[in-house]
Structures are given as C-alpha cells and as structure tokens.
Length: 209
Image (cartoon, rainbow, N blue to C red; front, side):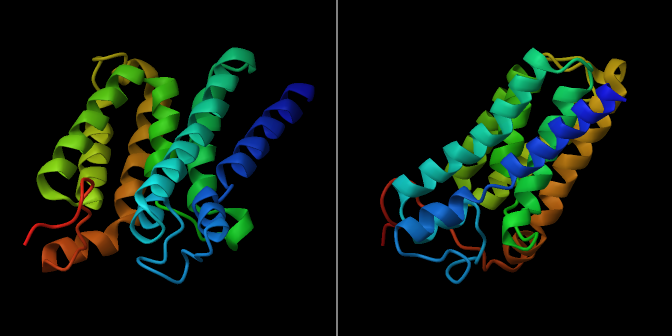
C-alpha cells in the first residue's frame, strides 16, 4: 500500500510541475497575455513570436527542464523501474492540459524533448538535429516539431541510439503515443501548412525583401 501511495505522489507531483505555464508567466511579466495574441497558445513558440526571441528561448528552456528534471529525479530515486517513463509522460500531459489554466496548455514539444533527453538522450539528439534542420530550411517551427515527433514515434521501436525497441514495450508505446499526441496538437498548424498560411519565424533577423 505504501508503494502505491508513493507512486501516486510521484505522478501527482509530475503533473503539477509539468502544468506550470512558464510561457504564460513570462508573457505576463513582460505585459503580454499570450492567450490573446499570435496563435493564442501558451507555449514557447508563441512567446518567441509575440514577446521576443530572448523570452521565447527562456520559456523553451524552462519547458524543457520541467520534463527533464522530474524524469531524472525518478531515475535516481523512484523504486519502480517504470516510474521515470510514467513521470516524464505525466509532465508532458501536465503541460498540454495544465490544471492552472483550465486544462488548456501548450503543444508539449519542449517538455517532451526534456523527458526524452532523460530517457534516450542520443535518440532525442538526432530528433533535435532534425528539428533544427527542418526549421532552418523552412522557417516553420511547427514543421520542424512534427518532423521530430514523427521520427521519435518510429525510431523508438528500433534498438538504436539507446532505444530498447521491442525489449521495452511500455516505453515504445508511450513515447509513440506522446509523439502522435504532439502531432495531433499541431493539427491546426498542419492545416495552415497545407494551405500555405502558416506563419514563418525567422530566427536570425527578419524576412529579407
């Protein structure tokens, strides 16, 4: 019974930490309610677009850390071997469905990135490189995010770069589900990409004319 209580506390704590809306907090500190501007999303991308590059990067870093640190803590101190994965996934769910914002949150990319650094760092390193490449070539953060998520959804099933493949079926299933959920959260972006109306973000300076 005590083990079940401890496990429940780990999960509850992960959900509450993952739900901290850093993008919203940073926006409010700068006098901007990110829920009313841009894409109206509280994630780092909208902060980047509407508050400023520096503040978007800070929001991104905090969102990564709230997925990474609880996952690493569970790897170090949780007894059950499945707890790091469960804690990481719960952090991502907390970000997407934050209890502090009436269960309306971000799209989960940065927090999932942090979780996966803790679980399969080499694999997520390749996914991040893919994100950077796609973003650099297209100037679409949403396209880079979906590309990286799709890569993880497939590659986690194969025993490469630290992934255990079918030898760790729960990890494969949950990572795939969370990656697909990230893509699903980008469904409006995908529609705009197909229609040619998605907003581009130029990391270095503005669009040249």
